[in-house]
Image 1: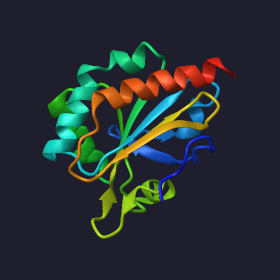
Image 2: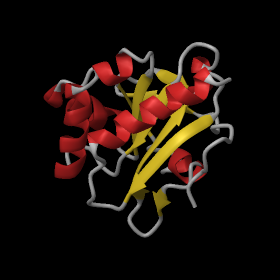
Image 3: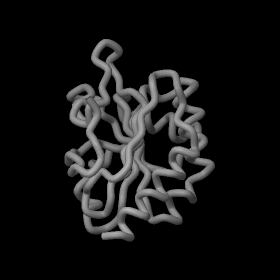
Image 4: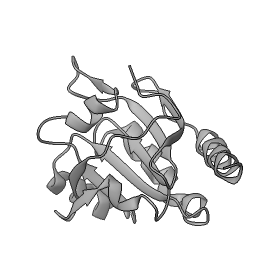
Length: 159
C-alpha cells in the first residue's frame, strides 16, 4: 500500500543520471520536492508523461519545487533517455537494491519488477502533503500535478 499524506517521507539516497548521489533529506529546510515514480525509461507512456512535465517545468520551478523522477532503470539508461528527450530535471536510479525506494513508498509492483505511476509532493519539512497514483498504462494528467501543487501551497500557507 502506498504511503499516505501527512507522514514523513522516507529518506533515501540514489544515483542520478550523472552518477551523483542524491539524498532526499538534502532538500529539507531548502525546498519542497515532487517525487515522480514511473515504470521504465523509453516506454511510450513514461516518455509522453515526462515530456509533458519537461514542457511544463515552470509549474514546478515557479513554485520552488524540485522535480525528481524515479525508476528502476540504471543511471546509464536514465542518462541516455534524459539526453534524447532533453529532460532538464533529476532522474534517479532505483536500480540496486532493485526497487528498494519504490518498495519503501509502497508503489513497487513485485510481479512486474517496477513501480507504478505514483507522485508524492513533499513539503519543505519532509512531509508528504499530496499524492496521486494511476494504474500501469494510465498516464497522470497534468491537471493532477497542478491541483497537487496548489494544494501543497495551501497546506504550507496555513502552517
